[in-house]
Image 1: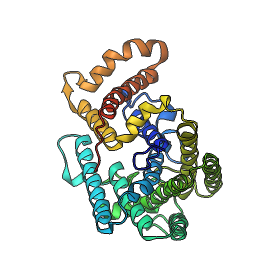
Image 2 (image 1 turned 90 degrees about the vertical axis):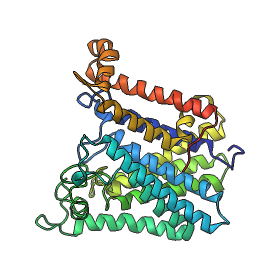
Image 3 (image 1 turned 120 degrees about the horizontal axis):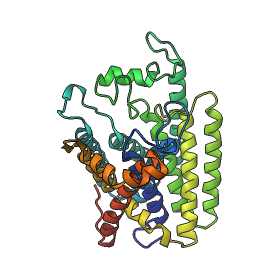
Image 4 (image 1 turned 180 degrees about the horizontal axis):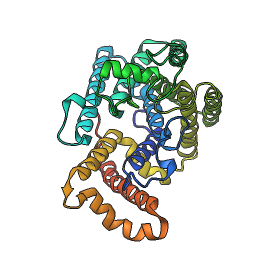
Length: 368
């Protein structure tokens, strides 16, 4: 724990790990050659990539007790900050959607949901719960959200399909998204950041709040072990629930919410033990640079990748030219197309690591 507003160094490292991983899996050299663990599961099941977004939401939740503690005592200012931050995040998400959309922009099919949009909604809900409810109320809200989502998807019939059908086209969450958002989705049938599936995502972030409260209030070294054990139990509960309610990131099923939160708690506990307890910080500084500027890291890296893709040359995009010139000639012959694609992604992460590292050195932190 540093002296800067009782900041938790390990949380910056953990959040930085999630952000760096999100950039890595979002910007391969080509989507036609990606290692299986670096792509999302097609439907049921999970890969390492499926854990990146819940880890980020968990980190956001864990930071809430620290962030709001600095503003408590001025309820009106806290409320304004929460609403303003959520609106800015949502607006930035729409900007990213516009940048990523294929030209010309079609407003009739413009995607409304997205990663930053979900973060905005989840942050609003989490901040409201932590500011207005006791720990008992917060736990009850998480249990109710996970149970209600399970009941809704398994018991409420979808017109023309029936109840409990968890296919991409037939599940209740996708039906609600189509009914309320029409064609403003990622694809014809559904959106992985849709409306109803945001409910269990809030529960994932609330598990992060519990972890953040635990580490903030109990600073003894052995409490890393307590958080790790809690993570193992949550992971096991998610795996057990997954036998009847499949682990599915696209639907953010209740089993997936518990399972991913459990793994995130274990990862945060390890970071806390290594960084805050043992004081081993040298290895973590590049990740801390990502973690101190998470919004800038995500927004600028994903936006710049989209711009590289949109700049058209005679034989493809500017990104394609860089990939084919700098990575394919020496990586594909010896290691395969997937290695060349991964090599590009790693280099892209390193590039942004250098930029964010310089921002960190100059103490430039972009906040909203």
